[in-house]
Image (cartoon, rainbow over all chains, first blue to last red; front, side, top):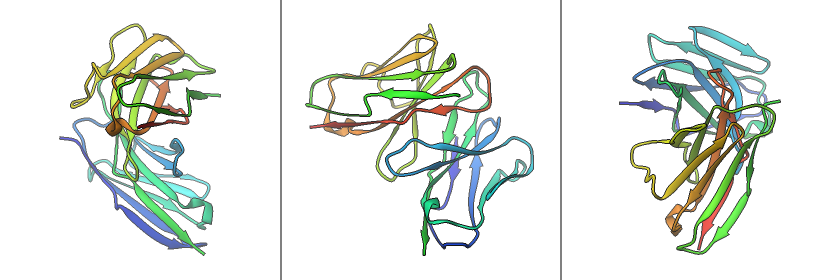
Length: 111
Length: 115
C-alpha cells in the first residue's frame, strides 16, 4: 500500500530552526516534493529531491534517504509568515506520474 | 511562467444541482491535469488524473459518474460535480504538468459549498 506520514502539528519560535519529518512507503518512487500551503490557498512548491542528500534553497533545505524512506524539511530563521501547513508528496512511477500527498504538518510560529 | 487558473474561486449551490469548475494552464500546454479535493485541516486527496483527449483515470472510491472530468484541450480541464450534496462541500484544487517534467503547477483552488 501507499503510506506517507508526517507529524500533525508543530510549534516553534520566531528565529528558531525547525525540522519537519516525512516517512514514506510507496509502490514506486520518482521524487519527493515539499509544498507550503496557507489556509484557503493552493500549495506552493518549496523543494524537490530525487537523489539522496541535502538540497539547500535559502532558508529552506530538504533531505532525502531513499533506503530509509525518509525525508525532512528544515526551516531556518523562522518568521511569522512561515506559519502554514507543509505537505510532503511522493511522485510515483506510473505513466501519469501522480503524486501521493502526506497528511501534512501544521506549523505554528510564535513570537 | 507556469500559471494555472481556476474558475470560479468559490461557489455556493443548492443540493441536487450541478456545478462546473474550470482549470486552465495559461502559459503552457498541459498534457496531464490532476484534480484534488481537500477537507478542512486535511491533506490533498487525489481524485483523478486527466490526460488530454482521453478518459480520466479515477482513484479508488471516487465516483466517476458524480465527478465528471473533461480534458478537452491542452489548456483546459473541467470538473463537474453532479447532483451535489452537502458532503461534497470541499476545496477543489487542480494541477497541471507540461508533460513528463518533475513538477505539478497548482491552481488557486475552488471552494464549493452545497446548501
